Each structure stands twice: as structure tokens, then as C-alpha cells.
Image (cartoon, rainbow, N blue to C red; front, side, top):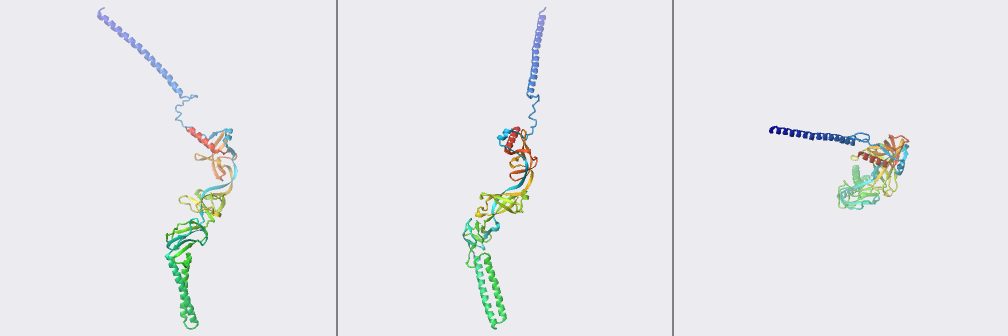
Length: 410
């Protein structure tokens, strides 16, 4: 063989060896990929298995599913019921007298209240009483100095003098006429002048009397109490000018007072004159019974409430204007087919419920309530007579139900 042939054979051998080595290197790589795919398939199945629960269901999309509605049932054993002090009663018929519990305020009886103003323009010289002073009828209250009063007194005095003069003239003319000395006409003129003077004198005297002003005294005038009572307001102070348009003080006879209760418009149809009422206040040792004497026909513009008035005697004046009170108005008694204890009705999510006894505990039963007297409440719909329910401690069941709903939401 020539040298060229030998080199060619050697080159071919090297190429063949390289091809063989390359094939051997490619074969394990393919096997590894197949193994990886096989292992990945097993890993994927394992990962998929992680999303399957014990029943073989896939829960990967469980979070996207809507939550189930919270149950109104509360599981509780007989021992737990006793331990929590939950009382069980049966719904039953009852005779109810509906009661309205209303806020109220003590006010002075307007029919026994007098606001005193100055009888004429002038200046306050002195104030003889203070707020809270108890006065008798005729007691002096305020002294004033008024030029107008001085003028009225002068006018009354002048009218009285003219009247006296007219009487004297008439008597003289009457004597002259009787003696045949004067004419009949002179006597008639004298009598006419007497009548006119009498009218003027009466008018001047009546003006002073109507204003409570004494005939004598110059420019000074004293205001006197027109009734016995208590001074409840006294804006007057010494040196104050008054034109007679504003009260100087107010006196009220507090031996009888008004209790004015605020009645919501929705309850106004239940309130009428003559219905019994019970009044309680901190100033009273015990509740006082009375009757509604007046129901206001107009609602307040801001409160949208009417006024129900109870008139009460006030011995010892323990009730003072401005005091807060409470009024319970009691309606007529009427039979109710199904009633429960008032404390048994709870409000959950703006619905009234009663916790009805079940074999496993309680169920929050939605009901429609009717009348209530504060002790028992009528159930119009949702509960039958004889149904056993949680009468005492129902608020504990409400709390448990709220806690259960909160845990369910989380």
C-alpha cells in the first residue's frame, strides 16, 4: 500500500470512531429525558393528589366556590342549658295592656302662670324678689319710676276736681231753679256738664285701676303679685329701662303642674284624652298616677312629635318646671293568642327572632311581633301557642349565634 492509501484508511477509522462515540453519547441523554418525563408524570400525579381530599374530590377550586349560608341552629345540651341559666317556657295566650314609655318634662300650668310687664314706659328702681321666691297675692314685686304714670295720676286728679266743681254748680242751679230765680235752661246746662265730668273722672280712674296703679304716688309705681306662687323668671334689674312690651318677671302657681310627654307620630293613634298614665321622676319617691288631659293636634316642626299632657297636683312643690320625667301610657286590655316573655325577642340582622327549643338545642325563628306591655310580647306570625322557647338568657344564644357566624365567615 502506498503511503496515501494508509492515511486515507486511518482517517476513515477515526471518523467511524467519532460517529460511534457520538451515538453512544446521544443514547443516554434520550433515556434520561424519558426517565425525567416519567418522574415528572409521577410528580404531577402526586401534586394532583395533594388537591384531592379523602373522598377523591379535587379541591383546588374550593376557595372560588361560594360559602354555605350560616345556620340559625345552635347546638346545646341539656346540661349546657342549665349551666347557662337559660329558662325554657311555652308560648301561650295572654291579656295585654300595651304601654307607651315616653320621655317627658315638668312645666308650669299655663292657666296658673302670669307674666308681669311694666304698665307704662319708665325705669326699674328696685326688684323686691328673686327667682325662686315664694310670694303671696298682693306682695310687692318691682318698683318703677314712670313720667307717664305721673301724667295719668295728674289727669285723674284733675278729672276728679272738675267732677266736684260740676256737682257744686249743679246743686246751686237746682236751688235757684227751685226758688224760681234761674231759668230752666241754666239747670239743664249744669246737669250736662256734670255728666261729662263724671265720664272723664271715671275713665281716668279706670285707666289707673286696670293697670294696677294706685291713685296717689306721683311717678313711682309698685307692681304687686296678682296670685300666690313662685317667681320662676326675673329678667328685671334695677336701672333697666322698660317700654312695657317685655315681662319683668313671671309668677307661677306650682300647686299644680303639667307633665308634657313627647308622643311619636306613629304612636299618636294610641293616645287619647282620659287614658290612664303613670309619671315617674327623680323628685318623686313613688310613681304618680294621672290621666291624659290634653293631646296636641300639631306635631313639632323639628321633633315631629305631638304633646300629651298630664295635669298633676304638686304638694310641697317637689316638681319644678324643667325637671325631666317619664310617662307610661297604658292602653286598654286585649287578648293575644300567642305571647312570649318580652326579653325573649331578640333582633338579628334587622329581624325579630325567638330561640325555639329543638332536640339538639335551639333554632332562631323569625317572628312578627305585635303589642307589648313590657312584660309579654304578642307574636303575630312565626310561632304557635305551646312552642317551647328560651324565655330567659336568650341574649346568650344571640351572642353564640353571632360568634358562629363570624367563625363561618373566616
